[in-house]
Image (cartoon, rainbow, N blue to C red; front, side, top):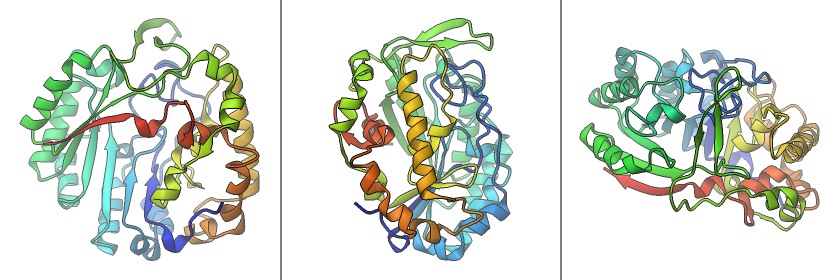
Length: 357
């Protein structure tokens, strides 16, 4: 099986910073909302990096790109607005999406961003409840401040989406959040369950000293099945039996990390930085994932976009042919977990409701 080539590339997923002011408990940037992941060293793209990597040729090749990332919030990067301006100047037809917790920056900054982004572009605000529940997951952000920033962006002409992760503690507020989104002019409301519960439906949220503060639990009747202890114990059989149905192969998409490394997707890119705690119920699997990732990187070689163009990387023989091995005889756990046809919960299955407002 071969990956698509540069002249088929349609979308790029960018992590322009791995810094974030929040401490979401299920994010690998920290351990259960407490201690920061020691493997993550703060890095930011500059506008010069952006122009060097996303050349005119690249920007005219693709249809869209989105700022999101595994560990960082794009609005923390001081050059974000300038990157958007540059991209739309080069290719006015390109579509930009920005995923954020919305808790940083002033309302004036948000108003200016709205003026930078014409109407077809969108900012997705992660707002997981109301004032009394939002920060149980979005630790380090303030509901009122996030909503104030979103309103400033919308009132200045920006298109916004409210993205809601449903847990047991906030499921009763879904309709109220949707109503509030309508009231404040959001264009869309999305709701999803989390696929990050592993072996237990009680996820511990810890403080900076590692002390238990409370639990996160799936919502009632969640459509996302747990990664059970049985699956963990027999993961090799599950992985070997999986048929890979690669999302990015269909989307014609690549991911570029805060370190400027080109990878097929955010899931494979995150593997080297996943902190494995001694008490992690899936630590053996995570160690195997790290080992597999090291082998993959060794075969792909240097994919840093400051050293090699996007075209040269994804048209290389290694990039084109390595997937026959890693989707076949030596199947990657990450690929089976994310895009395999099996009984594992998929991130792509998380979105359960879309509402145009």
